[in-house]
Amino acid sequence: MTSFFHSPARYLTRSVQLTLLGTLWISVSGELICLAQSQGPSLHQVQAQVLFNFTKFVTWPDDAFQHTGTSLIIGVLGDDHFGLVLEEALRDKTVMGKTLAIKRFQTIQDAATSHILFLSSSEESHLPQIIKTLQQTTVLTVSDMDEFAERGGMVALTLDDQKVHFKVNLDAVERAGLKLGSELLKLAKIVGDQPRTGK
Image (cartoon, rainbow, N blue to C red):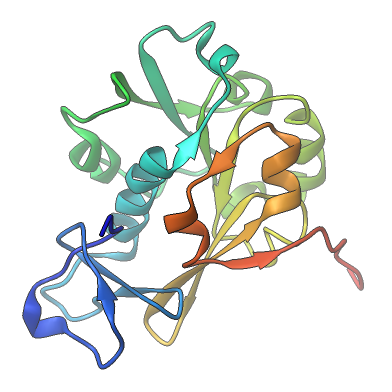
C-alpha cells in the first residue's frame, strides 16, 4: 500500500497506521501526529516533511512548469520560521523528474511562480489579497493560519493536542486546475469556501 509517513515501531498507536517517512504518523482518522517528545522533530521539521510529501500527491497541469523548466518550486511568503529545515528536508530530492527548489519571497506577485507556497501567519492580514492575486495560477497554497482552508486557502495545517492535522479546500484546489491523490484526500478533512465573519 502506498503510504504517506513512517515512524519507528515504538510510536505505534491503537489505530491502523500508514507508513512512509521517519518522523511522523498519519492515522486512518486523518491525523498527522507530531512526535512532541524532546527527541522528536520540531513543528517546523514536521511542516517541512509535509510540504515535501505534498509534492508526491499533487498533479499540476503541464503549463505549470512552462517558466521553471526542470524545477519544482516550494516557496515561503512572509516571516520564515523554517531556517535551514526546508533545505535539510529537500536536499538532493527529486519528484517526477523535477528538482525541488526552495525560494523565499517578499511579494505575492513574485511568489506566484511557486508550485507549492507556504504562507506564514505574518501574512494573515493580507490573505484576501493573496488569494485574489493567486487566482488563475496553479499554486498549491499551504498555511497554519486560523481557518485558512475555509477562507480560500487550499491546505491548512493545524496543531491540536500535540497532533498536526490538515484540511483541504477542494473548491480552491479544483479552481487552480490541480489534482490531489486519493491517498492524501482520504487522510484530510475536506472543507469548502466559508467566508470568515465577525472580524
